[in-house]
Amino acid sequence: MIGMFEEGSIFTQLFVERLNYFIYVVLLMIGLWAMIAKNNLIKKLIGMSVFQTAIILFYVSIAVKEGATIPIYLPEHDPHGSHQPVGAEGSLEIADQSLPMQPPAPSAYTNPLPHVLMLTAIVVGVATLGLALSLCLRIYRAYGTIEEDELLAKLEEVDARTGSSMRSGRRRRAFAKKPKEGRAR
Amino acid sequence: MKKVAFVMVLLVGLLLALAVRDFPAWADRNSPASQSPVSSYYVSNTGADTQVPNLVTAVLADYRGFDTMLETVVVFIAGLAVWAVLQGGRTVRSRNRGDQVQFEPDLIVTNTVRLIVPVIQIFALYVLAHGHVSPGGGFQGGVAMGASFILVALGWSLREALYRFPLERCFAVAGIGILIYAGIGLLCIFCGGEFLDYAHLSSVLPVSPQMARYHAMLGVEIGVGFTVSAIMFALYACLSTGGRMKGGL
Picture 1 (cartoon, chains in turn green, cyan):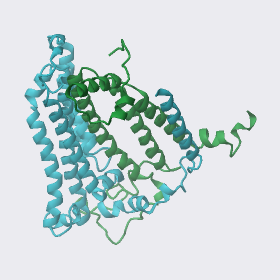
Picture 2 (spheres, each protein chain N blue to C red):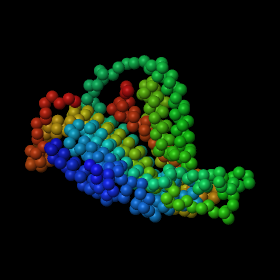
Picture 3 (cartoon, rainbow over the protein chains, first blue to last red):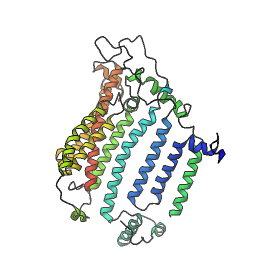
Picture 4 (cartoon, rainbow over the protein chains, first blue to last red):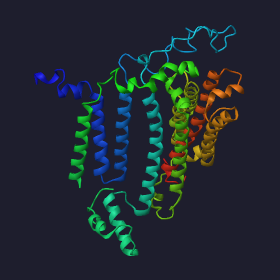
């Protein structure tokens, strides 16, 4: 126990220096578990959202730099900030082009690129989640259930009745399990 | 099945945790992502190139304008797809009809909503218009605007909200947003530049090429805000009623 927090031990590496990345791994495992093992389609979608959150956490953690501020220019770097010379009639153009601004050092601001990528990923995530929920609604309307095993059993029934199957016989036998009785909807 | 899934998840987690040990430490200034020339260019040159203080907006709407435009199209298509998916098959099952409760809108709720909806909408417009200089932009402002419509639907009823903002108008507004975005890109072509190369707009706007990029970004963000706010409300309206556009929450 004494050596746990020493420099270079696995504990320090995982839980102190890289705690964000560790949390991202845990969140990703939770989401993956829900997507693979849960029977309810809505729970699978919840797992997908948790998975997505893990990726967002990962990207935002990458963007952080020690001692850097948010990616919005401070007044001394802001082209319209109070430190800039303003034209005579108060125009927003930089008045004196002969005095170019010092470009800020990259270490002064956090990396804007992962933030941009995640901003769009969040919005598209909302849109895809809405589409997935509407597909679940349609499935429920057509089959009266969103439990995966009951759904597969009903598909089997339909296949047996119409005599047409999209799956090969071997796979059909593998999937043809009896649904559990009395499952709460 | 569950055991196999558990082993799989543990295996993936173990491999990722092993990989995490090789990552640079958190907030390391010398990590490859922080040293990458692309993001360093963005940080150093956004001010001189575009006059925009908010780096995220500049990268979103200018340097990566193509990405954001097609992202907006994805949101639009998803909204249309939700509507289309829920339109079909409505005769198959209508057993929830009996669960619907007729209710009067609550006095306190409606008056509170009446008070805060204008504030939300003004704030959404502020977030949208100030996307250059402070945290904000088209996506954030659009979502706040869409939330105000959803609040009207929750406070009164969906019928009331759809009376003010019908679904057809939702999709029309969303399409107009994409047209604004793509139109600004096309205008750049007509001004002699490439698609979404805003600097060439200075030949029609009375400003320098840098400020032309600044103002074009505002226009693009307005387009994004139109699309996102309309689609947010359309998603709510479709999903809460199962596509029937009646009843709802």
